[in-house]
Amino acid sequence: MNGKSVLFLLEANPGPGLGILLAYSIFGKGAARATAPGAAIIQFFGGIHEIYFPYVLMKPLLILAAVGGGMAGVAVNVVFGTGLQSPAAPGSIVAIFVVAARDSYLGIALAVAAAAAVSFVLAALLLKIGKQDDGDIGAATAKMEQMKGKKSSVAGALTGAGAGTAADASGHTGPIRKIVFACDAGMGSSAMGATVLRKKVRAAGFGDVEVTNKAISSLSDEWDVVVTQKELTDRARQRTGSAVHVSVDQFMNSPRYDEVVELVEQRSTPDAGDAGDAEETTQGDSTEPEPPRGRHAAERPADEPEILAPASIILDGTASDSATGIDEAGALLVAAGAVDESYVAAMHDREASVSTFMGNGLAIPHGTNEAKSSIKRSAMSFVRYPGGIDWNGNPTTFVIGIAGVGNEHLTLLQKVAMTFSDPAQVERLENATTTEEILEILGDEKE
Image (cartoon, rainbow, N blue to C red):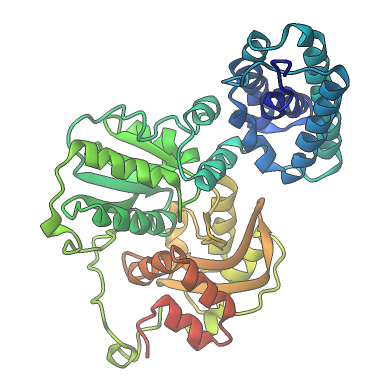
């Protein structure tokens, strides 16, 4: 027994993460490049290694850089016979040297340097020769939190993903009674997100809490919690300054929804009698009444077009990316007589400002709020891509185009949201062979 072990250095070595973050600092893009130096300081001196995980998730091949750096560090440690007397917690360079064996200081320093150098070189090569996204570190952090099943306060604080989230609980301080999910147009993303969040709030026993959706332009400062895509949070805050603001990325399964439920629980008393009994409607921005539920095709007036018609469903799309996917979904809306050609251009404008990727392989492109005049009637289109397409860095299998007037399309859209929040139902959509199966799975009011 020599009172030290190299095994304590396998996980604690900050070199691999440091090299990756330094590579992003020089060769990265956008927010990833801007935040990497700060992350490197936190990781190296603070010992919080998970801070660099989102950077790897943005380009999974960087795992090779981490592995290579780790191997280099282990090799140097073995050659010099280094070791720690006890685990270093956290795994910062300071903590490592505090518990290092007296004869290991030089070897550990060289091992850390070698690990950082190798991971830096490999990461730099991978960043330069391969496709690199726009540096959306916030989305990568949300993905990491989704994989972990809990929020990362360190990563969120660094990237700004946590700014304005329920965890901050800044703004409204009383009981939570009114929650609004707001987006640019109020016809698609917000309706989907509100449906998923409403289900979680109801399941927690808070049937008396209102969960609805609106366009940002129609918001007033009456809401307790406002949920938006992170790109729209500042705009929403200008109209609802007294509310708690929550920013999300993945609408179908964002860990931020659980934070909202926790906040409701902290500030409210569950009314179990109301759970499940409250009317689960998603009110849009129109004053038109919501169409009656449970109406079958036989009860629909003959001159009233279907929201999602069989002719607007394609099982094998031909698009290859978000731009051509929008064109394909938009062309179906035009062919159905629901929108003018100009609406398709507005769908592209919407995507350029805020992504319509919802998570779980689903994108729901739709026009901007200003394009509502191009809509003749509410309609939806459905395109499936069995091989998947690249939706701005997100693998996407289903694209649902949306054109909404009032609340006419929201009943079906709510069912779409519930379908895509259930992996088993998504698998059914993937395996469906006819348009009739698609309509049945989505819960279209047609038999």
